[in-house]
Image (cartoon, rainbow, N blue to C red; front, side, top):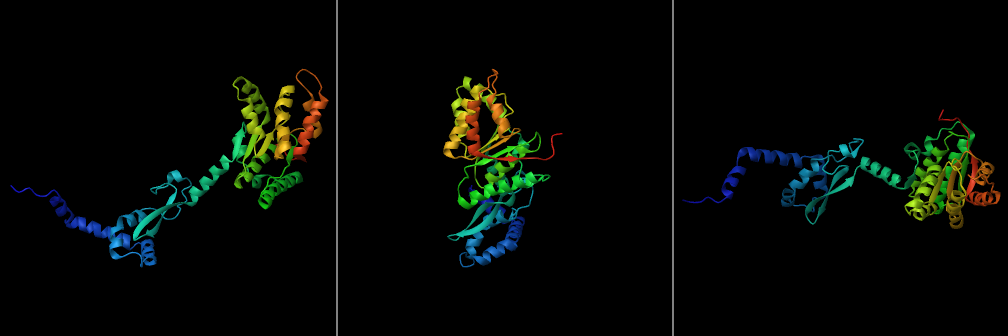
Length: 314
């Protein structure tokens, strides 16, 4: 009994007309594809007939995917083999290779992720952190001034390559959008790869008290005081103690003044009102000198700007 070679049935199978027909149909589909024809024409001197035949699987992989961004709105919905990437063809030593490049949607998503990574938030609402300068509602001339100053701050970085030493002390009534400005500015800075740390002061100071117990106090203070750009929201809304004023705020402000690191502050108080607030303590003592020392640092770090407008929380 003669044993037939194992590849005998396989050879007969591939000679079945239906297989040949399907192969030829797929081959025509590949070679008649306009993008493939354009590619082969550009590389006619590099690819022989045999090269093209051997690389049909690669060319089929290429035409089986979208080569332009479909605008699906979310790369998770992308139907390409690599979600958010478009195939491109090139020739390497007579072989067709496929490279994958990011589509427009993937680029947008990556940019948003990069921006988010450039903003460190401590107890700040998500909607504040998504604000942009262009979203700032202009219903008072002070808002025009603030938007212009924020734009100038970012432009100064682009022009000089350096961070300005001074930030803003933004004061005004409750609900006029001061926190929103901080979030908008943080996003504008993130677009030019400047990292900001945005801190809601009352919660931060409460956290500092708890940090004593878990031995993370110095680490957290260092993180805040050394931020490339620091934004302190709602300074003056906290219950002040001598310890939080002198050991926390005093330490942060002193370091940033010495290092000339830009600091942005929002408060319901103007400079005088904040100084009065800082002078109070839970024990009922009035410590004018210590409050004055903190205010010297605040004034060295910031320029005061009043913000007016409608209360948007009512």
